[in-house]
Image 1: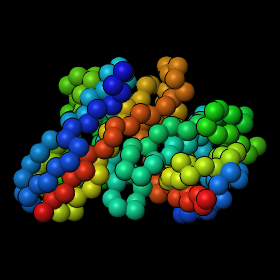
Image 2: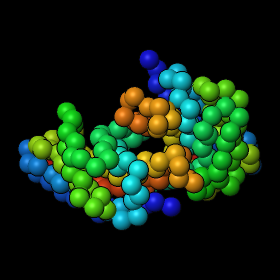
Image 3: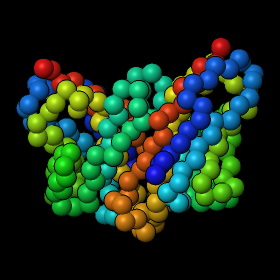
Length: 114
Length: 117
């Protein structure tokens, strides 16, 4: 099953950029890379997703390696409200045998210091 | 737009009791799934469904049953509760990826905190 690997935890200072890495060496050509985050005592929420090209939205940027075996979620200016667990998952193609199973793993716990 | 609604939010069960966690979505999503999250851990997939009448097992299905009689509802049944099932349960839904116009986003409920004593 397609899985991702993330560091257990990272720390950042408020107002500074944060780069959260994710390895997905078994990714196939049609798998989307998704990022979600989970604030304390809440369900996960969507952050950003991409396929091949780098993506930007109001929350973050997603940088995807040329071989697609890794990606990086970029928070341009971390705030205290960005302290959360960040999950990198693969959204598999419907043609994959397990396309409708979304594995979240343990994610990266981001601590933001004031 | 209510999104994904889970009930109850909190529940305490005695060992051996049965109960049903309810999940409903109003976005006409084909995919629905249940996850459990133990303290300090990530989410683990219990069961999922790709449409009404179709369900399948995830990573940790033992001790749980599901059914999908309508597109909107996906209840999770604990047949005989055990302390090991103490956890936070999340229901999620999403569109079929190839038909999605919303970026293939997965929407989660707010969670159901279950304690089995």
